Every structure is written in structure tokens, then in C-alpha cells.
Image (cartoon, rainbow, N blue to C red; front, side):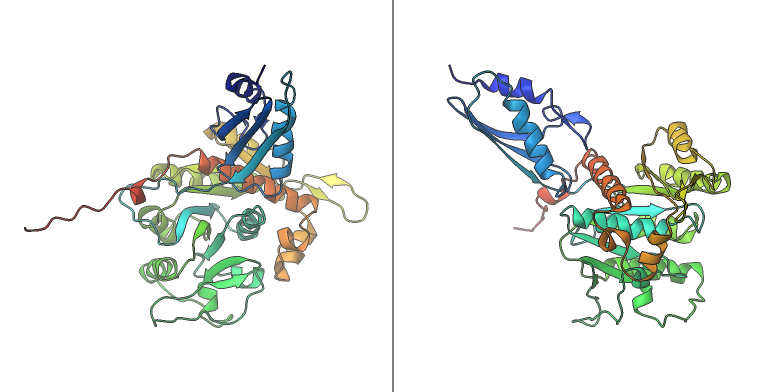
Length: 362
């Protein structure tokens, strides 16, 4: 007696994707089920980059299918396919970019830029094509964090080629000015510069563009919300009450302009003494989690106050590339997978599939 497709579907309903937190059937990731007597092959197509967990998911699916009585050989081919998702109405997509992730905070000094660069590197480590745009015109930090020197090239005199660092495509005002030159600009000039950096960079087939925003809820954030096609935003905070007050303002700003909040990252949640190993919550406890519950938004992860994180970004080798198998890098990768899953749950952008309508006099 051969295996039925119903048996395969029933078994897979009992297997839960650890990143999507849904079973493989309701997540609609199972494709091309082929049954040859007692042998079964199928595809699992994940809507998020999952290089570090593909083997684990393949093993999980195959093990669950082998529990079917009389099952012969099983082969599950696991892969990822990242699609474009919907953005604010009336905003045009950026050529060469499928999804834009804004990383924001209400106030400075909470580790937003460090989170942004490690999130971008973690998405790349999971197999995605990723870029990072440093939107902090007054205080650009990504050139130093990525260890990139030199100036971007332009073949046509108008558009810039992105700089490359650790596999990321990167653009920052910091590549175009001297490191000690202050940007003494008013708001309109800053917002124009941001739009030019975004639209006049020749991004090459990016699954995700991470935008490292300056702190606050001013001109640049408003420009981003109104004119840049943002798929979703990540809010960075520390457990400290004073940081949480400002983080809530940033969160509410994105909600007002209908940009989905993908989740909250809590930085500096726990300090571990490098000498004795004593754990201490210097900036308070559970602030990010409370904020998440108040607004029904996911807490994506909590990162320790670790001297190595600071040393690594200062040296131009952020944690995800400096210590890819370390505990902190694993936290960043888990955050990256959850961000990608949350984007995968959003409505897809089908605008590219519709033919353009041309009206002619005949």
C-alpha cells in the first residue's frame, strides 16, 4: 500500500518551523509533493533567508515524514525565496531593492547603528543579498563600522556605485566627505541628501536594504516615512526608562504613517563582568518586553552590554563577522531571521507583475 498525500500533509501539520512558529502546511511552505509508491520527495520553500538552519529544517521535516507507517525513502529539498512586500501607498519602489528595513531609535546612544550593521550582516550570513544605507547625515558611522575607506565611483557622473564591506553594499555621506568635516546643513538640505543617497546609488539586486536612521522623530524620519518605500521598521532601545520614553515616540511615529513595526531590539540588557562573570542589569530590567506588550509588538531579542561588541565595530569588523559562531552573533542571526519572517508575513507587492498600460492614437 503506497503513501497518500493526505498522510504527508497530516504529518507536516505536526512539524513546526522554529523561525516562523507555524507548522509547515499552514505556513504554505511545502511545494511539489511527489509520491512514488512508499518514497516521498517534496520542496520546502522558506520566505526568509535561513542558511544556518536549512540542514536542521531538512532533518526535522524528513524525521517527521519517516514516522508515517510504511514510509520508504524521504527527500526534502529546503531553499529560500525572498519576495518584495508592500510599502506605503503612493511611494515608488527603489530600483534593485526588494525590501527596505528602517532601524530607528527615539534617542541616541542606545546602539542603533551597531544593531543596524549587525542585522544587515546577519541577514547576509543567512544567505540574503543585503545593503546598508547610513541615513545619519550629521553623524555617519557605517564607514568606520564596516572598515571601508575611499570614495564611491560613478560611471555616468550622476549615479554612485555602492561601496563594499564584508559582503554588504553600502552607501553613506561619510564616503563623500572628510571624516572631520561637520555637516552644517538645515533640514531641507539633509532630506535632499538622503533621497539622493538612496535613489542615486546603483543598488544591485538586494533582498533587503537596511537603513540606519539618526535618532529622533525629525526631518529625516519624516522624509523616510513619506517618500521612501519602507517595508517595516525595527525599534532599538535599552531597558532604561529614559530610553524607553523616546523609543515609544519613534514607534508611534511609524504607526502614524502606516509603516509596520517588525519588532523591538533591547540593547545593553545585561552586563556580564569580564573578570568574575557576575551578571548585573545596569540599565534596568524588562523594559523592551513591557513596551512590546503595551503595543502588541514582538520583542525580537535582547543583547548584552559586552565590551567585545564595541571593540569589534570600532575595529571595522562587527560581531557577526568577527565572531560568527559566538553567542552574540547567534542572537543577531536569530533577530535577523525573525525580522525576515515578519516581512514574509506582510502583504506581497505585485506591482511589478502588472503590465504597463499604454494609450495610443491609432
